[in-house]
Length: 468
Image 1 (cartoon, helix red, strand yellow):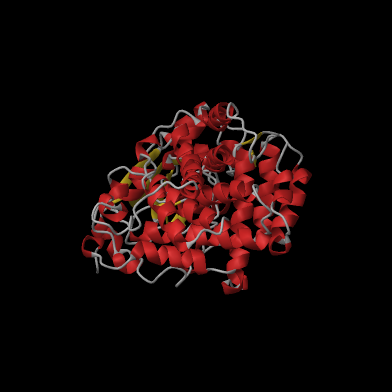
Image 2 (cartoon, helix red, strand yellow; image 1 turned 90 degrees about the vertical axis):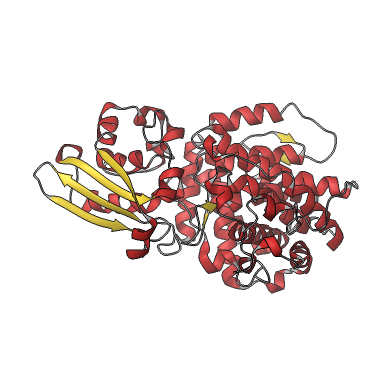
């Protein structure tokens, strides 16, 4: 497999050619429908996340920046601020509950990439500065997420394993790609914008379970937009930033896979080929296979807290390291705790967004059930033997009667293997409106506009319906 350590291909120029050459006519109907599904999902989770404390802190900070120039909408508020700060706020809200879609890595790789939370807020903020149609928005969104996902696929996995967050490393580049398309940049301007965006890469996984994880999304969106704006003002940057000896791929491990990138942009499209996971629950995507199976067991075996003696669960070490909150004390931490995610359905008999609250996490019966969960990992050798997916969980439930129920979970609800429909995401939007203190019916215009996005004349009419 070819490594970026010896790459001679003009990888950054491939990205620029892809962005500048992409047109709506190049998109198939399936691609457009998948894009609309993820856009609606992104707006839904931004609405729900807008009322979270971390989002409020960022919004309060950003509200201090005023300008007589272009203004962007902060979703879930009446606030209009400079576009870069609107992108910051909306990206933070979009990832605040970890309810946004995720592009999982290939099974031989590690973790995933939240492309929509980085790209969508940036292009929406940019679109508000001019009359951009729904078709143009779709093209920019697909360009941005494709660039971000392919770059994520090609990076050396060690950069994630050693602590960097892919949303913070790959996100600014994907966001810049989308904004560059919105703004109609030339090939050379795109190269410069990518060079600026790559220098904004960062974000540490140790911050999972704190406000900083969602801030990584907001910062990625802001930096993508800022990179294009600075390029337009004449700021310079390296034109070969991805493949250069001291560039992006080398800095993030140096042995990323050139084969996963070279000639692969849109061939095949990431959102179609491996697909995005659209989350039913606001928790780390690597928990969703286990949640799906536990809910099945609760229903089929009538599991109740009093009937369970112990729950033994095994996942890969990578999943264990990502779902790193093994004794959560808050809703933020619970989103990254597999112990909570398998215990909560047994206590509640179900699981939805309302259970990810500080009050529920701290309930004595929930904490008692979490104490019954024994979480271990299987080796890479065992993963190969059992043909494990990235999210495989082996679950063994021991009942107080002495009976044992063993099961295996490979994919979660919302994954490409168990997909959600547009109606499912529309219902999620209505739920999000309720969580934000709005009548569910208030979001129907947004659902209708996104469902017919390719016929929308001006994206600003969509953003107007997200101001409350």
